[in-house]
Structure formats: C-alpha cells, structure tokens
Amino acid sequence: MWTMVRDERPWSGSDPPGAVYGYAPGRGGRHGEALLEGFSGTLQVDGYSWYNRLRRHDRLGGALTLAYCWTHGRRGLREVHDSSGSPIAREGRIRGEHPSKRQFVRWTESAPLVNAFGVWFDEQRSRVSPRSRLGEKLAYFTIHWDGMLVFLHDGRVKMDTKFVENRIRPLKLTKKNALFAGHDEGAVSWARITTLIETCKMNGIEPYAWLRIRPERIAAGHLMSRIHELLPWNFKPAHEFKT
Image 1 (cartoon, rainbow, N blue to C red):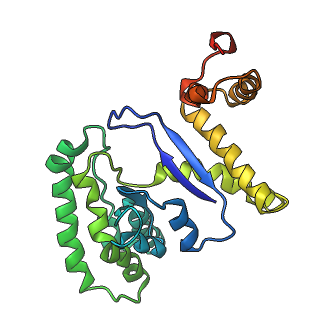
Image 2 (cartoon, helix red, strand yellow; image 1 turned 45 degrees about the vertical axis):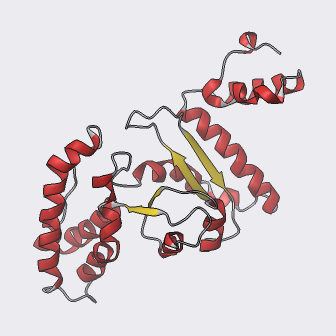
C-alpha cells in the first residue's frame, strides 16, 4: 500500500487536504515511481533507498527534491541511548521548532541548532566505528543530510513524516485482513475506498453520510461538469444540491 498525503496545510495554503492510497503487489520502487509519474516538486520521504530514483533529471516531471525525515534519524539515536546510555546518542536528540512560524523561525531558531548538530556530527563520525550500532544509526544522517536541510529552505515542508505514518498505521493494523482482498482488483478497490474515507475524515466530513449521498446524487442525474461539487471538501447536505 502506497500513501500520498496532502495535510492540513499548516503553512496556510488554500488547497483542501486529501489522501491517496494505492495498491501495488510489492514494495518495489517501480510501483511508487508509477504513482508519482509526472509529479514535480518536493516529496517528504523516509530513508527507503528507492526514492533516489526520483532524483533523476530524465524522469517525467523532472528531478524531485527529497525532504528527509528527522524523526527517523532521531529514533535510531534514541534506540542506542535507551539500550546503552551512550552520551553521544543522548546529545543527538535535536529537533527544531514546530513549523507554525515556518521559514522565518526556522532560519532564526532551527538553523543554528541544525548547524550545531552538523558540527557535532562531523566530530563524532571520526570517533565511532561505522560498523557499530551507533555508527549504523549515524549513517542515516550521512546519507540524507542534504535532504534533511530542505525544511530550512521551504516553509511548506515538515521536519518529519509522522503525519503520513499516522494515516498509514490504522491500515497497517488490518494488514492480515487485507491479505484476503480476493485478488489484485479487490485490493485496488479497497485502496480507492480508503482514499475516499480518509479524505472525508481529513475534511471533517462523516464518511458514511458522504458515501451514501454521493451515489444518490449521481444516480439522480448530477452533471459530470459539476462533479467537483460532490468532492468531500465541497460536501453539502442532500437538500442543498440542485440537479
């Protein structure tokens, strides 16, 4: 299951929030690449290596800017600290401000923290074996450092992917049930229904009410030229629709 999420626009964007779930028969990079075909811009990601394919300049839509997740790096250092009490790992628990004041606050408050962490990180790499547990966790920062700085330059980008993870978690809990979708087409339909339900929830719409009224309006002759009126963020009670 692949997931793309447009969140609640904490940078005061005008577009409504939405989620897109897509089924694929595996985790291979080609599935995610197909889902993102033609998209251009910035993509918030975790450390999955296949995302590097999206930085190719010859891809349809051009090279994407990858913004990597600070929480994934912090979790690794926290794991080492919790198990060994390493003082180096404890120092690495650095997070910037919440992106409410966005880029200005990041440059004035977060950037100094990030720069200090970068200095500390360079010092520690020479002291820690890359094959040690701590060295393996530090490797995340080594590989993804440029992408982890994107949030300082783009006020729309979050520092982590927790919002998307939280949207995936309920589906992950039903993973065993999803194994019995019947066949690939059943799984595709399941992903589509999940997309609709999750988008309703993100827009403060009761999913059952929307799912019940929408097909009724289509069956009653709602014009395709006005299909946008039936999207979750434009949802209105049945008596307010006019065919």
